[in-house]
Amino acid sequence: VVVVLANDGDKEIRRRVARHPLSPDNALRKLALDVDKEVRRRVALNRNASSAVHTRLGKDESVAVRIAVAMNPNAVPTVLTAMSMDASPQVRAAVATNPNTPVEAVKELAKDRNGAVRAQSEHNLRNFSKTLRNLSSDTDVYIRRQVAQNHNTPAETLAELAKDPDIYVRERVALNSNTPRDALARLARDDAQQVRWAVEENPNYP
Image (cartoon, rainbow, N blue to C red; front, side, top):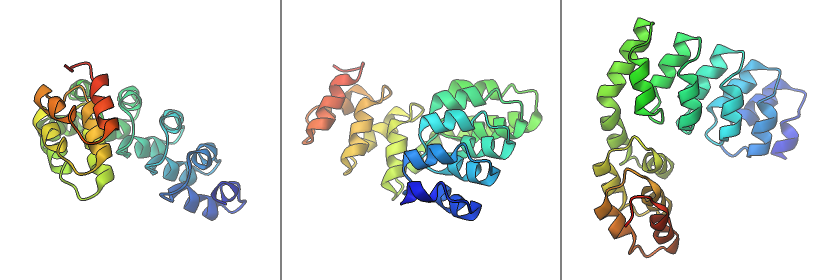
């Protein structure tokens, strides 16, 4: 039904589908090509949007759409790194605020020709670890999963997340190359087989 609505002639209907948290990837891929800028902007903000959708919308002609991609907490590091070189200082500043942006990219943005981008980048470099640490105790399990897989998350925060009751949080901690070895050793004895398997894929184990 949602996929059908993504083709609706009424742009207000398409906008609702674009922002709906349960819209499937195939509907969002369709809407990422929509002629209506607001539809595309809402797709860019949708946490269900895939990296392929973000890659496309990260090059959108609309600055508002590109800013939306840069603000999405599920945007992948490769897309954000590419967007850190965007022509718009507003987009670059938004990239600097995203906790998924690699620290190396933010450090480059701290040398940006635009003063506002530099200021935002420098502020975020000082607060990156604190922000991720705070998000690691969020009541929303999806937020904790994002922190667990973020390669900017400090080792001590990952060690705490290794004790999380959510199996998918622990699995992502097990896969994270920043996870300390003592936490990996604990996860290697986890009750969940998929967590134990994830540990074996971590290049830092044993």
